[in-house]
Length: 418
Image (cartoon, rainbow, N blue to C red):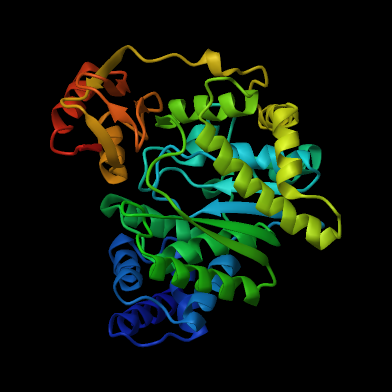
């Protein structure tokens, strides 16, 4: 078929989906192929993205979409057990990946982690890892890194895996929306393309998360499991009630500090981030041990690897393999020039933290483009505060962004104090 015929078939398929009709595999493939090769254009791609937001897809279509995304891009293959974890996201300042990967790899399993840059939050895993090392490599180089140290933490957008997904992410980003179906296909297509066969999906659920309600969480869980079953992937979907960031900082540099403090076992480390990371790592290890018929407990092993310093050692090996500085320490990072502490206007108890507003203020400060912009949380949900107690600290590199964020804060309150 000519390029023009391919394009027309893709357009007809989008029209069909806009009318609420189910697509066949050849129709789904035509859309993904056109998007993957940047032949469809942003307007038509946005129309297609909107159909997933409004109408959703049938289980068969989700399978077709995932399969087509994989087949129109690069695929990698690794021997044996290949582990991974992924968070559906929606909560800033919870950078578990950079802790989970070195724990699982130090336990002896392969974990080639590809991550995204920020889409709806002030930092993505790739944005944070970029502060430690390079995150863009060719597929051949990725294989070499994983062969050498057992794992990697990279930006997936440079590898050509599921390229249609990266184009769809680009058109969705200005609106900061992602449908559940789109999230599921996006995650699963990239896992399949990377040869993953043991997978933990972390689904934060809460009032200001992407997934707000139990019924939606259960539906998302079921769809993940259905696609995993099609491709022979061992999967566990972990639904957890989430009301606030697990780390102390929001924004790339502050999240990097949190990660290093956990790996270093620093006394001031964010314990909730450590707890969350150990939970995910232990689930993944349990799954891998079960397949290999090894009589070990995932949580016991994960705690031992972290507390002994083996996770930190493995993280530094990964950094070095990715052309970074393995001598990096949490104390190497310093606050930028412009900071402002925000004080409580009244006494009371912190009843809730608005994660949408938290991300909005961090973005006004300059995140994610400005990796030094962010927010340090001094108080957590449930804390008692007195009038004029420090609630949080705004950080950025320009006086203008700092003032704009401070001026916007009353209209986008982060804390509810009663």
